[in-house]
Image (tube, rainbow, N blue to C red; front, side, top):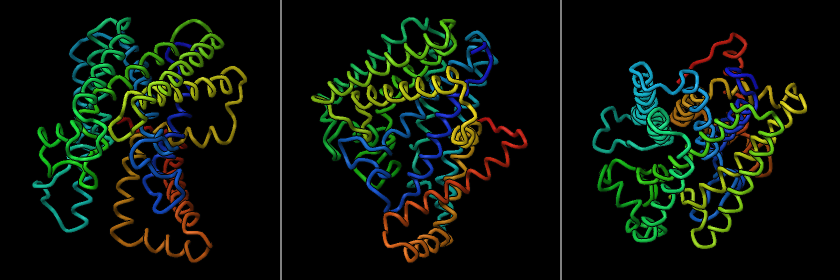
Length: 358
């Protein structure tokens, strides 16, 4: 992998993650694996967001390495602008959804948290750390963050799925009850869970460093596989005391999902770079999503809101439910077709070499 060359395995994994994220967000009453765990546990849907954070961490290393991690004005301004833009997009999507319901000024119940907001927070903090600290301490920093968060969960009733949890109390204290996720006591993208999420990004960052090292393809695959196994096994052992929980982003959840992400990246690197099978149709499919990932995700959220508000989503799901015998299958097909709609839009951009960086 030459310095500066795009890492195709990372683009493919990013594309797979975004395409699955789009399907999960439009799953309706689809199969159980298309839905998040109600509390403790791990489903296929639960790995989507953590995979994206891991990939974002790796991409942050690759991006900042081009300027030698210099803490100059240009780099700092870029970090601030990009973080602010991602947050602005997140808030615009929420506002747009309220406008479609006739609520043009939803300031008294505006939701500040969200998937894109957390991505922005982790990206900003990770980037600042990357240009100010020695990267050799990053593994210890990730361990310290997870240890600190573990203590907070233990002393703050963190695993209670109600308003007594320190995770919920922190959001209410800092944001107010009217400005967080309203469908459950615990906001799945709450502020306190940014601590383990940052550790998540750091682990991805270290994987990005490995990808740019000079140890050779086989060496990289072996190390990623080994690290992935160690992280996953460690997380599973830790889950005996601290269960896997996406909503509070538990330490065991961080370890297992980063481990799975690193092993997935190792497998893709083996297939694409070691065995030279980059021409698989599936890989080309996912690269379309991977090259414009954040833009396509944001667009999918806007379309989801439009389709729901105009009744398009309802008409499509009703048609599919009448066409097939299973509600789960019908809703799964809808989420698949919705994702394919975004694919063709992404393909339009891809063929014209239009890459919208957010």
